[in-house]
Image (tube, rainbow over all chains, first blue to last red; front, side):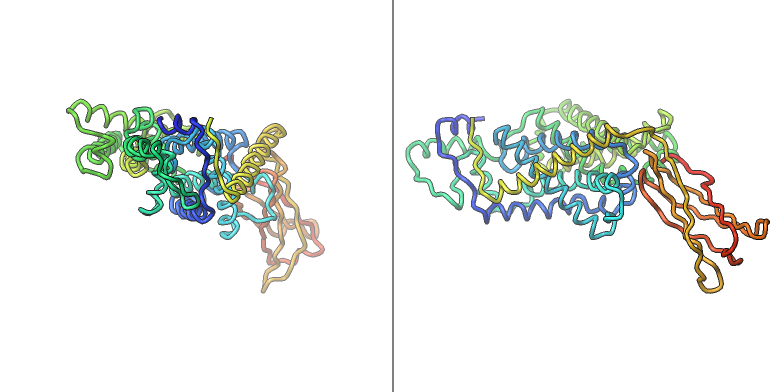
Amino acid sequence: MGGRKRTGRGREPRTRSVALSLREYGRGLAGGLLFSLPLLYTMEVWWMGFIASPLRLLVYVSATFVLLLGYNRYAGLRRDASFREVMIDSVEEMGIGILFAALILWLLGRVTLEQHHSEIVGRIVVEAMTVAVGVSVGTAQLGGDEDEEVGMQGDGDEGEDDSVEISGGEEDGSDQGESGAGGGRTHITFGGQIVLAFCGAVLFAANVAPTEEIVMIATEISPLRAVGLALFSLSIGAVVLFFSSFRGSERFAPVSDRWSIVIGTVVTYAIALVASALILWFFGRFEGQAVIVCVMQTVVLGVAGSLGASAGRLLLQ
Amino acid sequence: MTKVNKNWLEWTVFGVGLVLVLGTIGYLLYDAATIGEPLPDLEVGVGRAELHGQDFAVPVKVTNRGQQTAEGVQVEVVLIKDGAEQERGTFEIAFVPRRAEREGWVTFKTDPRGGELRARVLGYERP
Protein backbone atom coordinates (compact mmCIF):
# COMPACT_ATOMS: atom_id res chain seq x y z
CA MET A 1 0.00 0.00 0.00
CA GLY A 2 0.96 3.59 -0.51
CA GLY A 3 1.60 4.32 3.11
CA ARG A 4 4.45 1.92 3.38
CA LYS A 5 6.31 3.37 0.45
CA ARG A 6 6.08 6.84 1.86
CA THR A 7 7.52 5.76 5.17
CA GLY A 8 10.37 4.21 3.29
CA ARG A 9 11.26 7.68 2.11
CA GLY A 10 12.88 8.38 5.42
CA ARG A 11 10.08 9.84 7.46
CA GLU A 12 10.94 9.99 11.15
CA PRO A 13 9.13 7.27 13.04
CA ARG A 14 6.70 8.63 15.58
CA THR A 15 5.54 6.87 18.68
CA ARG A 16 2.09 6.89 20.20
CA SER A 17 1.75 8.44 23.63
CA VAL A 18 1.54 6.14 26.64
CA ALA A 19 -1.96 7.46 27.37
CA LEU A 20 -3.12 6.46 23.92
CA SER A 21 -1.68 2.96 24.18
CA LEU A 22 -3.22 2.59 27.65
CA ARG A 23 -6.58 3.42 26.12
CA GLU A 24 -5.96 0.85 23.41
CA TYR A 25 -5.11 -1.83 25.96
CA GLY A 26 -8.23 -0.94 27.92
CA ARG A 27 -10.33 -1.47 24.83
CA GLY A 28 -8.49 -4.68 24.11
CA LEU A 29 -9.20 -6.08 27.57
CA ALA A 30 -12.87 -5.14 27.32
CA GLY A 31 -13.07 -6.74 23.88
CA GLY A 32 -11.26 -9.84 25.06
CA LEU A 33 -13.74 -10.29 27.86
CA LEU A 34 -16.73 -9.46 25.69
CA PHE A 35 -15.96 -12.20 23.17
CA SER A 36 -14.61 -14.87 25.48
CA LEU A 37 -16.83 -14.63 28.55
CA PRO A 38 -19.19 -17.41 27.44
CA LEU A 39 -16.19 -19.70 26.93
CA LEU A 40 -14.59 -18.76 30.23
CA TYR A 41 -17.79 -19.94 31.92
CA THR A 42 -18.17 -23.19 29.95
CA MET A 43 -17.02 -26.39 31.62
CA GLU A 44 -16.47 -28.30 28.39
CA VAL A 45 -13.79 -25.75 27.59
CA TRP A 46 -12.10 -26.20 30.96
CA TRP A 47 -12.09 -29.98 30.38
CA MET A 48 -10.57 -29.45 26.98
CA GLY A 49 -7.52 -28.08 28.75
CA PHE A 50 -6.64 -31.48 30.18
CA ILE A 51 -8.25 -33.77 27.62
CA ALA A 52 -6.46 -32.33 24.59
CA SER A 53 -2.97 -33.64 23.93
CA PRO A 54 -0.12 -31.09 24.01
CA LEU A 55 0.26 -31.49 20.24
CA ARG A 56 -3.34 -30.55 19.65
CA LEU A 57 -2.93 -27.53 21.90
CA LEU A 58 0.13 -26.54 19.86
CA VAL A 59 -1.91 -26.73 16.67
CA TYR A 60 -4.56 -24.61 18.37
CA VAL A 61 -2.03 -21.96 19.40
CA SER A 62 -0.51 -21.85 15.91
CA ALA A 63 -3.92 -21.63 14.23
CA THR A 64 -4.95 -18.79 16.52
CA PHE A 65 -1.72 -16.98 15.79
CA VAL A 66 -2.32 -17.24 12.04
CA LEU A 67 -5.86 -15.97 12.61
CA LEU A 68 -4.53 -13.01 14.59
CA LEU A 69 -2.01 -12.24 11.85
CA GLY A 70 -4.80 -12.32 9.28
CA TYR A 71 -7.09 -10.15 11.32
CA ASN A 72 -4.42 -7.63 12.22
CA ARG A 73 -3.34 -7.49 8.61
CA TYR A 74 -6.77 -6.89 7.09
CA ALA A 75 -8.83 -5.24 9.79
CA GLY A 76 -6.57 -4.33 12.67
CA LEU A 77 -6.17 -0.92 14.13
CA ARG A 78 -3.21 0.02 11.93
CA ARG A 79 -4.36 -1.47 8.73
CA ASP A 80 -1.43 -0.97 6.42
CA ALA A 81 1.12 -1.82 9.07
CA SER A 82 4.23 -3.68 8.00
CA PHE A 83 4.50 -7.42 8.52
CA ARG A 84 6.77 -6.83 11.49
CA GLU A 85 4.23 -4.60 13.18
CA VAL A 86 1.48 -7.13 12.52
CA MET A 87 3.70 -9.83 14.08
CA ILE A 88 4.42 -7.68 17.13
CA ASP A 89 0.76 -6.79 17.60
CA SER A 90 -0.22 -10.45 17.38
CA VAL A 91 2.36 -11.53 19.96
CA GLU A 92 1.19 -8.73 22.24
CA GLU A 93 -2.44 -9.76 21.93
CA MET A 94 -1.65 -13.39 22.56
CA GLY A 95 0.38 -12.46 25.64
CA ILE A 96 -2.46 -10.33 26.99
CA GLY A 97 -4.82 -13.22 26.25
CA ILE A 98 -2.72 -15.67 28.28
CA LEU A 99 -2.37 -13.29 31.23
CA PHE A 100 -6.03 -12.38 31.25
CA ALA A 101 -7.27 -15.94 30.87
CA ALA A 102 -5.00 -17.03 33.73
CA LEU A 103 -6.31 -14.26 35.96
CA ILE A 104 -9.98 -14.97 35.28
CA LEU A 105 -9.62 -18.76 35.55
CA TRP A 106 -7.86 -18.27 38.85
CA LEU A 107 -10.59 -15.92 40.09
CA LEU A 108 -13.19 -18.50 39.05
CA GLY A 109 -11.29 -21.20 40.92
CA ARG A 110 -10.75 -23.19 37.74
CA VAL A 111 -6.99 -22.96 38.01
CA THR A 112 -5.34 -23.60 41.35
CA LEU A 113 -1.78 -24.15 42.43
CA GLU A 114 -2.62 -27.70 43.58
CA GLN A 115 -3.24 -28.77 40.00
CA HIS A 116 -0.50 -30.38 37.97
CA HIS A 117 1.25 -27.87 35.72
CA SER A 118 0.15 -29.60 32.54
CA GLU A 119 -3.47 -29.13 33.61
CA ILE A 120 -2.90 -25.48 34.51
CA VAL A 121 -1.18 -24.70 31.21
CA GLY A 122 -3.83 -26.62 29.25
CA ARG A 123 -6.77 -24.82 30.80
CA ILE A 124 -5.16 -21.41 30.35
CA VAL A 125 -4.10 -22.05 26.76
CA VAL A 126 -7.53 -23.17 25.60
CA GLU A 127 -9.23 -20.08 27.07
CA ALA A 128 -6.43 -17.65 26.25
CA MET A 129 -6.75 -18.10 22.51
CA THR A 130 -10.31 -16.78 22.39
CA VAL A 131 -9.40 -13.97 24.74
CA ALA A 132 -6.52 -13.07 22.39
CA VAL A 133 -8.82 -12.88 19.37
CA GLY A 134 -11.23 -10.80 21.43
CA VAL A 135 -8.42 -8.45 22.46
CA SER A 136 -7.46 -7.99 18.83
CA VAL A 137 -11.02 -7.30 17.72
CA GLY A 138 -11.77 -5.12 20.73
CA THR A 139 -8.73 -2.89 20.24
CA ALA A 140 -9.66 -2.22 16.65
CA GLN A 141 -13.44 -2.13 16.85
CA LEU A 142 -14.41 -0.61 20.17
CA GLY A 143 -12.61 2.68 19.59
CA GLY A 144 -14.58 5.88 19.79
CA ASP A 145 -14.57 8.55 17.09
CA GLU A 146 -11.63 10.37 18.52
CA ASP A 147 -9.46 7.31 18.77
CA GLU A 148 -10.62 6.03 15.46
CA GLU A 149 -9.56 9.21 13.77
CA VAL A 150 -6.12 8.95 15.26
CA GLY A 151 -5.99 5.32 14.27
CA MET A 152 -7.06 6.01 10.72
CA GLN A 153 -4.56 8.78 10.27
CA GLY A 154 -1.96 6.51 11.70
CA ASP A 155 -2.89 4.03 9.01
CA GLY A 156 -1.69 6.27 6.29
CA ASP A 157 1.29 7.07 8.46
CA GLU A 158 0.38 10.68 8.04
CA GLY A 159 -1.54 11.36 11.18
CA GLU A 160 -0.57 13.64 13.99
CA ASP A 161 -0.40 11.59 17.12
CA ASP A 162 -0.92 13.08 20.52
CA SER A 163 2.75 12.90 21.23
CA VAL A 164 4.40 14.43 18.22
CA GLU A 165 3.44 17.39 16.16
CA ILE A 166 4.41 17.51 12.56
CA SER A 167 4.51 20.62 10.47
CA GLY A 168 2.34 20.53 7.42
CA GLY A 169 4.93 20.94 4.70
CA GLU A 170 4.22 20.60 0.99
CA GLU A 171 5.03 16.91 1.16
CA ASP A 172 2.42 16.42 3.82
CA GLY A 173 -0.11 18.37 1.87
CA SER A 174 0.19 16.13 -1.12
CA ASP A 175 0.17 13.02 1.00
CA GLN A 176 -2.91 14.01 2.90
CA GLY A 177 -5.05 13.64 -0.19
CA GLU A 178 -3.68 10.24 -0.86
CA SER A 179 -4.18 9.16 2.68
CA GLY A 180 -7.82 10.18 2.55
CA ALA A 181 -8.38 7.72 -0.23
CA GLY A 182 -5.73 5.17 0.55
CA GLY A 183 -5.72 4.95 4.33
CA GLY A 184 -8.54 3.95 6.61
CA ARG A 185 -11.64 2.22 5.37
CA THR A 186 -10.66 1.18 1.91
CA HIS A 187 -11.87 -1.70 -0.16
CA ILE A 188 -10.44 -5.00 1.01
CA THR A 189 -9.36 -7.60 -1.51
CA PHE A 190 -11.19 -10.89 -2.05
CA GLY A 191 -8.49 -12.72 -0.09
CA GLY A 192 -8.85 -10.26 2.74
CA GLN A 193 -12.61 -10.73 2.74
CA ILE A 194 -12.14 -14.48 3.06
CA VAL A 195 -9.74 -14.05 5.97
CA LEU A 196 -12.17 -11.72 7.74
CA ALA A 197 -15.16 -13.96 7.07
CA PHE A 198 -13.14 -16.85 8.51
CA CYS A 199 -12.25 -14.77 11.60
CA GLY A 200 -15.90 -13.86 12.09
CA ALA A 201 -17.03 -17.47 11.67
CA VAL A 202 -14.45 -18.76 14.16
CA LEU A 203 -15.29 -16.03 16.66
CA PHE A 204 -19.00 -16.87 16.64
CA ALA A 205 -18.83 -20.62 16.20
CA ALA A 206 -16.21 -21.11 18.92
CA ASN A 207 -18.69 -19.89 21.50
CA VAL A 208 -21.12 -22.72 20.80
CA ALA A 209 -18.86 -25.49 19.48
CA PRO A 210 -17.51 -26.95 22.74
CA THR A 211 -20.94 -27.59 24.27
CA GLU A 212 -22.59 -31.01 24.34
CA GLU A 213 -25.64 -29.53 22.70
CA ILE A 214 -24.11 -29.59 19.22
CA VAL A 215 -23.60 -33.37 19.30
CA MET A 216 -27.00 -33.83 20.87
CA ILE A 217 -28.77 -31.85 18.15
CA ALA A 218 -26.71 -33.48 15.41
CA THR A 219 -27.63 -37.00 16.50
CA GLU A 220 -31.28 -36.26 17.18
CA ILE A 221 -32.56 -34.16 14.30
CA SER A 222 -33.90 -35.59 11.08
CA PRO A 223 -31.96 -35.10 7.83
CA LEU A 224 -34.77 -32.88 6.60
CA ARG A 225 -34.23 -30.50 9.51
CA ALA A 226 -30.51 -30.48 8.74
CA VAL A 227 -31.29 -29.38 5.20
CA GLY A 228 -33.54 -26.74 6.71
CA LEU A 229 -30.69 -25.55 8.92
CA ALA A 230 -28.37 -25.32 5.91
CA LEU A 231 -30.94 -23.29 3.96
CA PHE A 232 -31.50 -21.12 7.01
CA SER A 233 -27.76 -20.47 7.30
CA LEU A 234 -27.55 -19.55 3.62
CA SER A 235 -30.46 -17.14 4.01
CA ILE A 236 -28.85 -15.48 7.03
CA GLY A 237 -25.74 -14.86 4.96
CA ALA A 238 -27.67 -13.50 1.99
CA VAL A 239 -29.93 -11.27 4.07
CA VAL A 240 -27.10 -9.81 6.12
CA LEU A 241 -24.72 -9.31 3.22
CA PHE A 242 -27.06 -8.09 0.53
CA PHE A 243 -30.55 -7.21 1.74
CA SER A 244 -30.43 -5.43 5.04
CA SER A 245 -28.04 -2.51 4.48
CA PHE A 246 -25.91 -3.72 7.34
CA ARG A 247 -23.07 -1.47 8.39
CA GLY A 248 -20.47 -1.65 5.65
CA SER A 249 -22.42 -4.06 3.49
CA GLU A 250 -22.61 -1.74 0.45
CA ARG A 251 -18.90 -1.20 0.56
CA PHE A 252 -17.75 -4.75 1.19
CA ALA A 253 -20.44 -6.74 -0.51
CA PRO A 254 -21.75 -4.50 -3.27
CA VAL A 255 -24.72 -5.84 -5.20
CA SER A 256 -23.84 -5.84 -8.85
CA ASP A 257 -26.00 -8.64 -10.21
CA ARG A 258 -27.84 -11.76 -9.17
CA TRP A 259 -24.82 -14.00 -9.70
CA SER A 260 -22.62 -12.02 -7.35
CA ILE A 261 -25.26 -12.46 -4.65
CA VAL A 262 -25.38 -16.22 -5.19
CA ILE A 263 -21.60 -16.55 -5.29
CA GLY A 264 -21.10 -14.29 -2.26
CA THR A 265 -23.67 -16.24 -0.26
CA VAL A 266 -22.30 -19.64 -1.18
CA VAL A 267 -18.68 -18.66 -0.53
CA THR A 268 -19.63 -17.21 2.83
CA TYR A 269 -21.45 -20.39 3.82
CA ALA A 270 -18.56 -22.54 2.62
CA ILE A 271 -16.18 -20.56 4.84
CA ALA A 272 -18.60 -20.96 7.74
CA LEU A 273 -18.68 -24.73 7.26
CA VAL A 274 -14.89 -25.04 7.04
CA ALA A 275 -14.44 -22.94 10.18
CA SER A 276 -17.12 -24.95 12.01
CA ALA A 277 -15.54 -28.27 11.05
CA LEU A 278 -12.09 -27.15 12.17
CA ILE A 279 -13.36 -25.99 15.54
CA LEU A 280 -15.34 -29.18 16.07
CA TRP A 281 -12.26 -31.20 15.22
CA PHE A 282 -10.23 -29.27 17.76
CA PHE A 283 -12.77 -29.89 20.48
CA GLY A 284 -12.57 -33.60 19.69
CA ARG A 285 -16.15 -33.77 18.46
CA PHE A 286 -15.27 -35.90 15.43
CA GLU A 287 -13.51 -38.67 17.32
CA GLY A 288 -15.20 -42.01 16.97
CA GLN A 289 -18.19 -40.49 15.20
CA ALA A 290 -19.78 -41.70 12.00
CA VAL A 291 -19.14 -39.45 9.01
CA ILE A 292 -22.80 -38.49 8.81
CA VAL A 293 -22.79 -37.33 12.45
CA CYS A 294 -19.69 -35.22 11.76
CA VAL A 295 -21.43 -33.63 8.77
CA MET A 296 -24.57 -33.04 10.81
CA GLN A 297 -22.57 -31.41 13.59
CA THR A 298 -20.87 -29.15 11.06
CA VAL A 299 -24.24 -28.11 9.63
CA VAL A 300 -25.66 -27.48 13.11
CA LEU A 301 -22.69 -25.34 14.06
CA GLY A 302 -22.73 -23.77 10.60
CA VAL A 303 -25.65 -21.56 11.64
CA ALA A 304 -23.41 -19.77 14.14
CA GLY A 305 -20.56 -19.89 11.65
CA SER A 306 -22.51 -18.27 8.87
CA LEU A 307 -23.80 -15.56 11.18
CA GLY A 308 -20.18 -14.84 12.06
CA ALA A 309 -18.96 -15.03 8.47
CA SER A 310 -21.60 -12.52 7.33
CA ALA A 311 -22.65 -10.19 10.16
CA GLY A 312 -19.45 -10.81 12.11
CA ARG A 313 -17.33 -10.04 9.08
CA LEU A 314 -19.08 -6.74 8.39
CA LEU A 315 -18.68 -5.72 12.02
CA LEU A 316 -15.03 -6.72 12.01
CA GLN A 317 -14.03 -4.52 9.07
CA MET B 1 11.79 -1.37 5.84
CA THR B 2 9.68 0.61 8.22
CA LYS B 3 10.89 1.22 11.69
CA VAL B 4 8.54 -0.03 14.35
CA ASN B 5 7.76 2.90 16.57
CA LYS B 6 6.46 1.99 19.96
CA ASN B 7 6.64 3.59 23.37
CA TRP B 8 8.09 1.91 26.47
CA LEU B 9 4.71 0.62 27.61
CA GLU B 10 4.08 -1.10 24.31
CA TRP B 11 7.55 -2.60 24.28
CA THR B 12 7.02 -3.87 27.83
CA VAL B 13 3.70 -5.47 26.91
CA PHE B 14 5.32 -6.96 23.83
CA GLY B 15 8.22 -8.30 25.89
CA VAL B 16 5.95 -9.91 28.46
CA GLY B 17 3.75 -11.24 25.65
CA LEU B 18 6.72 -12.73 23.84
CA VAL B 19 7.96 -14.46 26.99
CA LEU B 20 4.48 -15.87 27.69
CA VAL B 21 3.90 -17.05 24.14
CA LEU B 22 7.34 -18.61 23.76
CA GLY B 23 7.07 -20.09 27.25
CA THR B 24 3.72 -21.65 26.43
CA ILE B 25 4.92 -23.05 23.12
CA GLY B 26 8.11 -24.30 24.74
CA TYR B 27 6.19 -25.99 27.53
CA LEU B 28 3.76 -27.65 25.12
CA LEU B 29 6.65 -28.87 22.94
CA TYR B 30 8.41 -30.27 26.00
CA ASP B 31 5.17 -31.86 27.17
CA ALA B 32 4.52 -33.36 23.75
CA ALA B 33 8.07 -34.73 23.56
CA THR B 34 8.03 -36.32 27.00
CA ILE B 35 4.55 -37.76 26.85
CA GLY B 36 4.69 -41.52 27.20
CA GLU B 37 2.21 -44.33 26.93
CA PRO B 38 -1.08 -42.54 26.35
CA LEU B 39 -3.18 -44.50 28.81
CA PRO B 40 -4.60 -43.55 32.17
CA ASP B 41 -2.82 -45.24 35.04
CA LEU B 42 -4.96 -44.91 38.14
CA GLU B 43 -3.86 -45.53 41.67
CA VAL B 44 -6.19 -45.48 44.66
CA GLY B 45 -5.10 -44.62 48.17
CA VAL B 46 -7.31 -44.86 51.26
CA GLY B 47 -6.97 -42.46 54.17
CA ARG B 48 -7.99 -42.64 57.79
CA ALA B 49 -11.69 -43.04 58.64
CA GLU B 50 -13.43 -40.27 60.57
CA LEU B 51 -16.76 -40.30 62.34
CA HIS B 52 -19.13 -37.88 60.56
CA GLY B 53 -22.48 -37.83 62.33
CA GLN B 54 -23.56 -41.46 62.45
CA ASP B 55 -21.37 -42.69 59.59
CA PHE B 56 -17.69 -43.24 59.15
CA ALA B 57 -16.25 -41.28 56.23
CA VAL B 58 -13.14 -42.64 54.56
CA PRO B 59 -11.19 -40.28 52.28
CA VAL B 60 -10.01 -41.86 49.02
CA LYS B 61 -7.36 -40.35 46.82
CA VAL B 62 -7.23 -41.25 43.14
CA THR B 63 -4.00 -40.43 41.33
CA ASN B 64 -3.61 -40.68 37.58
CA ARG B 65 0.06 -41.38 36.83
CA GLY B 66 -0.72 -42.02 33.18
CA GLN B 67 -0.62 -39.72 30.20
CA GLN B 68 -4.29 -39.55 29.43
CA THR B 69 -7.33 -38.21 31.21
CA ALA B 70 -9.79 -40.77 32.58
CA GLU B 71 -13.48 -39.88 32.57
CA GLY B 72 -16.22 -41.25 34.79
CA VAL B 73 -13.86 -43.05 37.14
CA GLN B 74 -15.77 -45.46 39.40
CA VAL B 75 -14.09 -46.25 42.67
CA GLU B 76 -15.09 -49.01 45.05
CA VAL B 77 -13.94 -49.56 48.61
CA VAL B 78 -14.67 -52.85 50.38
CA LEU B 79 -14.56 -53.06 54.15
CA ILE B 80 -13.39 -56.43 55.45
CA LYS B 81 -13.59 -57.02 59.16
CA ASP B 82 -13.28 -60.24 61.13
CA GLY B 83 -12.48 -62.10 57.93
CA ALA B 84 -15.77 -61.22 56.21
CA GLU B 85 -16.96 -58.48 53.92
CA GLN B 86 -19.00 -56.02 55.94
CA GLU B 87 -19.88 -53.24 53.52
CA ARG B 88 -18.91 -51.69 50.23
CA GLY B 89 -18.95 -48.06 49.22
CA THR B 90 -18.61 -46.57 45.73
CA PHE B 91 -18.41 -43.15 44.18
CA GLU B 92 -17.65 -41.70 40.79
CA ILE B 93 -15.26 -38.95 39.77
CA ALA B 94 -16.13 -37.04 36.60
CA PHE B 95 -12.55 -36.56 35.44
CA VAL B 96 -9.08 -37.46 36.62
CA PRO B 97 -6.76 -35.51 34.28
CA ARG B 98 -3.38 -36.93 33.42
CA ARG B 99 -0.91 -36.68 36.25
CA ALA B 100 -3.60 -35.19 38.47
CA GLU B 101 -5.03 -36.15 41.83
CA ARG B 102 -8.69 -36.14 42.87
CA GLU B 103 -10.28 -36.88 46.19
CA GLY B 104 -13.58 -38.48 47.20
CA TRP B 105 -15.16 -40.13 50.22
CA VAL B 106 -16.99 -43.37 50.95
CA THR B 107 -19.08 -43.78 54.06
CA PHE B 108 -19.68 -46.90 56.14
CA LYS B 109 -22.08 -47.67 58.93
CA THR B 110 -19.62 -50.14 60.42
CA ASP B 111 -16.55 -48.74 62.13
CA PRO B 112 -13.75 -49.47 59.66
CA ARG B 113 -11.05 -49.08 62.29
CA GLY B 114 -9.44 -52.38 62.98
CA GLY B 115 -10.69 -53.75 59.68
CA GLU B 116 -9.17 -53.83 56.23
CA LEU B 117 -10.11 -51.42 53.44
CA ARG B 118 -9.62 -52.63 49.87
CA ALA B 119 -9.96 -49.93 47.27
CA ARG B 120 -9.92 -50.29 43.53
CA VAL B 121 -11.01 -48.59 40.35
CA LEU B 122 -13.96 -50.42 38.79
CA GLY B 123 -13.81 -48.69 35.44
CA TYR B 124 -13.45 -45.48 33.51
CA GLU B 125 -13.81 -44.21 30.00
CA ARG B 126 -11.70 -42.31 27.57
CA PRO B 127 -13.05 -38.79 27.18
